[in-house]
Image (cartoon, rainbow, N blue to C red; front, side, top):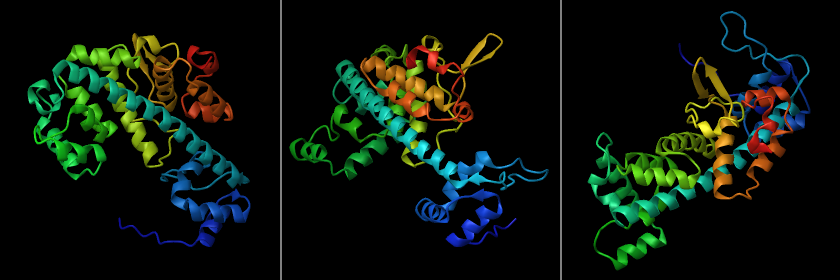
Length: 305
């Protein structure tokens, strides 16, 4: 099937929304359609759509009187939630850089990243090394320029400079590839996680969520592709799916918030992150909280008290 949809004017978009059951101030509609866009906003009015008829994927029809203001309200909430999560992930990311860099270099030397024997078989070390080498070559950071001017060997800077150029996804890959499991367990405990496996799972999950935030993607009711790792000491706070003897965290935004709250509180006992999450989420209706994976008794869970 060939794509046949044509571009539409803002006036036409407003008419589409009105014909499908959405009401609201025209100036408000015009402003948001101009500055945010019809396509991006369509992800936020999806929860209001009527169920599709047989053979339809979406009905694109709404209960009469659906208010455009309510759609904008959830859009603004999602933006606030993304900013809050992004701040927390930034703090987690910096802590990972600091602890992994310090412990790995103390154990294996300042240029441990240049020795392939420090990394496990099964990981494409050559590709990882080539990519970070290219990043260094293209970098104009002052500390990289200083290293180039002052030192001729080794040709790459030490690990504590290299990691400053890595994305969270790259750090996640390098941490997982490292052979020294005792060192990785020590890093995990410093972050408030029980072991290297849960740290690696957390890094993968947060890398995925960070990419959503960085690209301004919809987050509030998303089901994450990556699940939170199964951490027994976190179960009292998390949204857990029980299947027989199996306990598994659901792939919800709520569980991302729990992990961030637990690890930030471990690093900084006086963190305000849990309080700010609670203040923001309490503004939502019960149905919206369920869409994020919040259990009915979430306020009584230890991390939110």
